[in-house]
Structures are given as structure tokens and as C-alpha cells.
Image 1 (cartoon, rainbow, N blue to C red):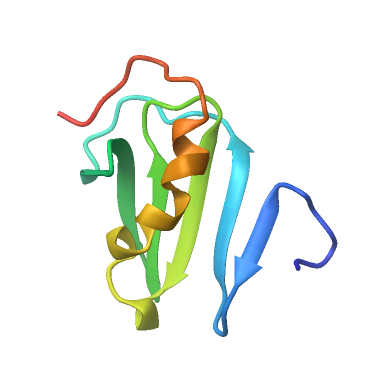
Image 2: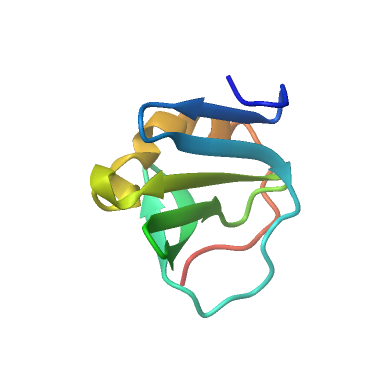
Length: 94
């Protein structure tokens, strides 16, 4: 549970992995893009971990993972069903 209570944000673990939904979709980017289980994600490094944002989905989902969990793409299969339920907008990893 997140504080304040926000239905668009969820957290798991210690340290927490955060997922946010309902974000504006990403526009064209040159950032690293990976495909996991048929869902495209833009992955960006953070100071301690990484952030993955769905690419080509509107609205977008964002996953923030501390570095201790390893590369964030390894965590993304847990979000496949939710990401696939979102409408596509025609953008894809190239």
C-alpha cells in the first residue's frame, strides 16, 4: 500500500518496487527499448536501479525497481497481462 493511498500506484517488497498506471504515453525516443512477452518497454537507468515504461500503450505503465533486484526487464513478465490490456498506439521498439 502506498501513502497517501493512490489506486494508480502499487508497491511490493523491501526495498519497494513501484508500479504506476494511467501515465501519458511516451513519444518517440532514442532510449533503450526492449520487448518482454510481446510488450515493448523503454528502460532508463536511475541512480539506484532502473525505470521501465510501456512503449506503444496508451495509457502507460511505469515500473521503478531498486538495483538490488537486478535488471528491471527480469521483473516485467509480472506486468505483461496488465500492459497487454491497454490499448496500443502504433509505436513499437525498433
